[in-house]
Length: 170
Image (cartoon, rainbow, N blue to C red; front, side, top):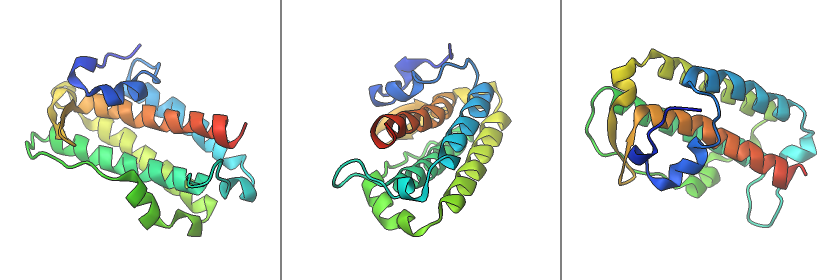
C-alpha cells in the first residue's frame, strides 16, 4: 500500500489515491500507463466516438481530459516542489473538454500524447527528492502535497479507465 498521508489531502482526492495499490510512484507510473494504452489500442473507430448517455463525453474527450488534468497536476507539483507558495486555481474540466475539440483529433494522436505526458510525469516525479515530495501548497482552495499529487495523477487515470470499462465498454 502507498504511503500517502490522506490527512494532508482534501477528501475529494481520496477516491483517486485509494485506487493505487503500488507502494511507490515509480511502480505506479510504470504499471498503469501500459494498461490504459493497451485498452485504447483495442478500441474501434466507432468506440472512440461513443458516449454512454446524452451530454456525456465521447472516449476521445475522456482521453483529452486525462492529458489536460495530468498536465495541470504536474504543474502544481512542480510549483510546490520548488517552494512556490502562490495559491493555484482550480480548473473547469467541462470547459476544458469543450474547448479542446478532442473529437477532431485522431485516436493515434491522443494515445501518443497520453504516453508522452505520462512519461513526462514519471520523469518529473522521479526527479523529486524526499523533501520535494513532502512540499505542500494550496490548489483550488485546499492544501495538498507533491507526493499525493503523483498518486492522484495515477489514480485519476485508473478512475477513468474504470469508467471506460463500466460505462463505455461493458
